[in-house]
Length: 265
Ligand code: 6PG
Image (cartoon, rainbow, N blue to C red; front, side, top):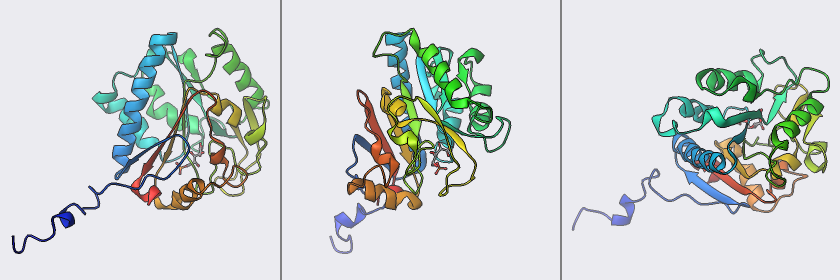
């Protein structure tokens, strides 16, 4: 029909066009809008939590700080579609922390507490802040992890779900290029020096790559054009010494990337 144009052009609405899927290890979920991406991750989280509670009676969840997952954390609290998350059976861990008191606005736990803990019925003894400003923080966190997971059968004594972000420099958790937390085979958590590539420049405490890679499900949520280059370099095969996120390789678990349009094309 004259004037109707090429029907393919109609499909070229950027919100509708399929997104490229970078070839990353694990599975890759892409969405045009960060909000849809956060919903996709939240649905997976709720389903995974329910499976773990069915299987083990509880669910060990480790959450990151950073800007990217904040809308998802809020949605977990107010969106009725995610009401099924079994908070009463959940142990809440922190992936990494700045060495500041937990009341400090730079504290990851402060954000997680005000968004999630204060609005859920999670029992207080199942909330595990990383007290990174205190000496021996990493050792204490390791002990706490071993104790809380220790009653589970061998092989199941690991975190069930770890939510990560990634910096434009390829760091994940507080594991920066050259960090001992990248390759250490024994430690579950480590104190690490202040990064030179990320703000705020304060020392941190972090779960190690070993702990993350032992988890049952590792989700990495990456949004924004400033991360595009790191995503492309990972897809091109850059290694962990260049981009620490390249070391993500759960030994007996699932790795899933959640990328918005800006991060993947
Ligand atoms: C943190 C993190 C860190 C974060 C990335 C991405 O506490 O800052 O755990 O690994 O996930 O730096 O941060 P954004 O989501 O703010 O880009």
